Length: 500
Image 1 (cartoon, rainbow, N blue to C red):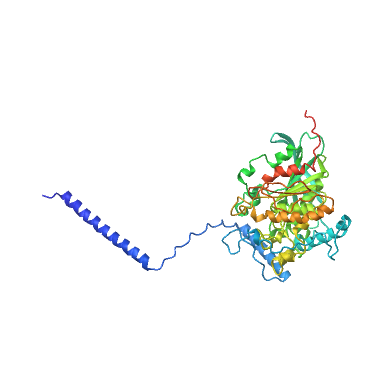
Image 2 (image 1 turned 90 degrees about the horizontal axis):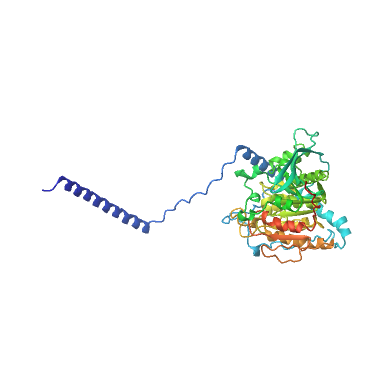
């Protein structure tokens, strides 16, 4: 006699067997269909979306694009060449192949007058050739600083005794109030700090940094590679501690405090104040020249501070502020020395070296505000080869004062691959320094001493022009020790006072 349990298990087994047969049949059918039917495309995994911009950022973007189009209309330009992309798979990907970079091999001669006559003496350089180069940069590249600018009145907002590492210091918070009596609708203040050793034996050299504000680097919509950490590259004493260890002081300047970093901000800040809120003309100054103006006004204050040796003030800037630091040194003869870090296109890099960032990027709606309106022409009907000047001549304008140019590795671009700094084009900056060498030699100074690009990590510092490419990303940190060794030939601290 068969039990009810046995019957139940028998029925379950039959059902399982039937299900298995159906499964096998379906599997075979699916395999047959896969062999005979055309492949069905699988939807690609969508790229992660960038966080949506807040309304105020969208408004800034729209206003910038509108002003950018206004300049194009003034120039009669219908379309600009598109800037290159950091995405290697883009049809507009940046070039990182050195064999393809020499598209425009002929540089303007810094020692040839516009009439073709050679410059053979320092007198002719200062009286004739240098003013010619300045005029070209003013009209075509960075724009003209207005002839009449408002006065800046400095206030020491606070004075604090504190410690930086193990060094006792005095830090002053400074505010430069710009006279806006001619246009009260716009108020402008230059924010800066000055830190000096508490027990210095006299006025000290000062390194001034054009600084990214912390709140800017923390904003995800404004991810600036110029402020990114680079792992072990930053595992050393801070640059401020290194400066203090040599008996010097340092100043921090916030360029964003007096001129915003976007096209919409051209109606505000120092540019908006001087223009009374009206749009720029094609050869009016851009934001880089405005930032440089502010650095010079901070130097005005330092010349009045008894703790500072104002003849020994150096300047440092990184990325967009590296561009600014170089422009500041070129136009303000009072600065003694500069460390120009990863300044790239629009800075120390040759425009004619087609590697990494290009003219089309700087002339586009996201960066055009840095430059004069006339600069857009060179991403439109004209090319980098049509520029009347290039950045070897910007470096030459700094002569005879010492300049240290630094960059990161060429392994990664600093954006998609943060291991390197190829977007800034280390070789293009090196070649610009080489091109400035004849002017330094004419003025009795030493150039780089070579035309051969050095191995990574090797510092060229025997002359008054210096260069070093470190092995990390888009950061100034690894080159600070080499720069300070170089700068110590020119900046000298007083003997330390005896502590109580």
